[in-house]
Length: 77
Image 1 (tube, helix red, strand yellow):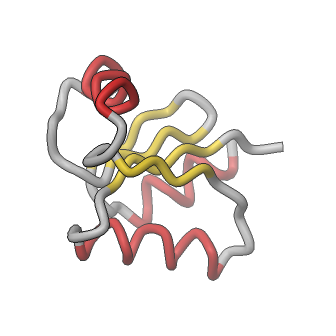
Image 2 (spheres, one colour):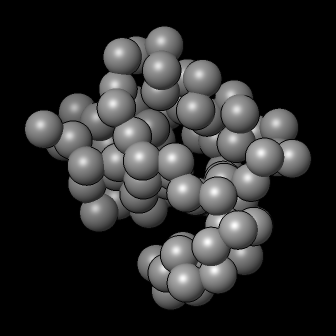
């Protein structure tokens, strides 16, 4: 079972694309809106070293931005 967290904001177009891509693959994920949850935003920065979204945590593998190849690879492992 995959453990997936998508750190995003509602105004980020690449966040929407990343979430739609995961949905198209029938993958369940936790959507964390970092514009409303400062603690989870800090968690995202600790994990990724980045303040920009989206950041995906797929089974502990951190992917910054929408990268279809990296997402697919992380889902397979």
